[in-house]
Image 1 (cartoon, rainbow, N blue to C red):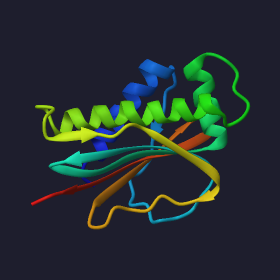
Image 2 (cartoon, helix red, strand yellow):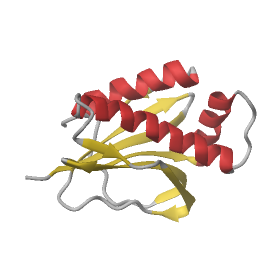
Image 3 (cartoon, rainbow, N blue to C red):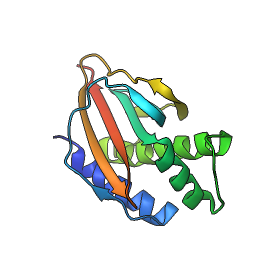
Image 4 (cartoon, rainbow, N blue to C red):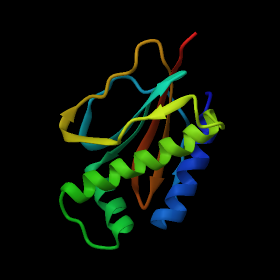
Length: 153
């Protein structure tokens, strides 16, 4: 699946250097519009010659563990700190992927990161986009990084 290796490389680099967590990738797949349960998603949109989105979807438990490691302080509930941390992770990942897809830096623009969370929600796929999702695991917890891209002809 196209771009899976770039997602793996970027995610492992960001997690090891910024959060001091080693994450292990799983087998890439195409995510359906399955509902996300007790989760949080950080999302960054891509616009320009290539349109799409980069999203990181984490269970609440994984998000709390990642935010605790990221901020160096105990975080026990999904709050502004967690939403900001997961949004910033999506932003760093999107920036890394953008630099691979658009080395000149002029053909793709990134949106501000956003975070959504809840007990039961879905993040729909972009119509006509090619998508790949890569699962990751750390300390018995998991999350996925999803990339959807559509090039305009």
